[in-house]
Length: 483
Image (cartoon, rainbow, N blue to C red; front, side, top):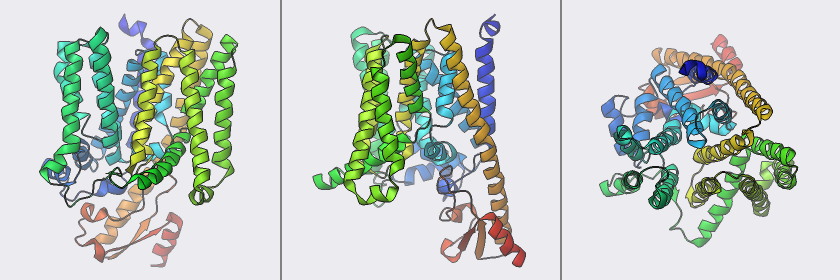
């Protein structure tokens, strides 16, 4: 009976899981996925996580242990990603066909930069995507509040804090908000459970930020992400101006999310005959696009006031979107507002650190996606025509993304396999100058054509004695034929 009642949901889950499995099987190693100075054994991975100089103990261990394990790594990444889709739908409005389809369409291709850094690059995946899985899983267990889930809840609450600094801070703030609101009403779970979740998260946060300094492992090692709070107010302002521009650019690249928000506002306007929210947000978005495509990057790099203008216009668009959707939403405005505040805080915390990249905003993307799923779910209530249209639209988005990305990643995978075979063949022949095929460097791969990390993967000994020459495939063929 359960299968018959939920046959479309189960069939959709099956299609999504298979397509994700195929897509992830064509992901290749990039950048420091090849950096395995202590080997990929469990002992070597523990040593790597302890010696690297930051508190990302879980993600550093898994990145080192799994990045060179081929199919196992692909399977684990695909499984985590599939469950993130399920958990995002479940935590937003409950797991049902419409929320599942929308979540899958939003997550399959957030942006080119986020796809390449967060999904393909394994070390980054465990830094930024894994904690989202643990966080959403812990929220789902909190919601159910059963003794059966107590140990998994404590485990997830602790481990979610040991992956990346900025993500850990937002997750802890979310835990604090849950504990505060739940202490008054106990709506989500028991007061003891929410306080326990907060306490364990706080312990994990302390280990993330304090343990490396207490152990002294980072005294001679620079942290991956450095705070600028001690550099003076002028340096802080300059960095904030630069970072808010980059944050605006990274968010603008999210090619499905913001058009989907605008589509929601348009649909709501057509139903309720109130167009002011849609017109305001659409006008602001057009202004963002004009600035985005009307000026080239050299203008932004050379003129600080143009960067500030772009950032101000984009932040205005963001705030208009937030205000408009809160005004429209009627189910639980307080919950939606909290999600938006966490999304804004996840951007604000990046103003005082460096370096930052689009991967740092993955948690922002998850929060906005959750908000959008909530908004659309209310819109679809008691509207069968719109329900079918929205499900068909987001299904088409998902299918198109898979149809484009699977062949593209397959071609890169085959080229990478040929490249590694050629490198090993040249090393076996004793060459010290290695000709290497260039992989596409268009944003889908994170630094695909570097050689610093290969010394440990290929056992090169002293990498300074090796020379790597990178060529496009067609040029390398000519060189080899000449040789």
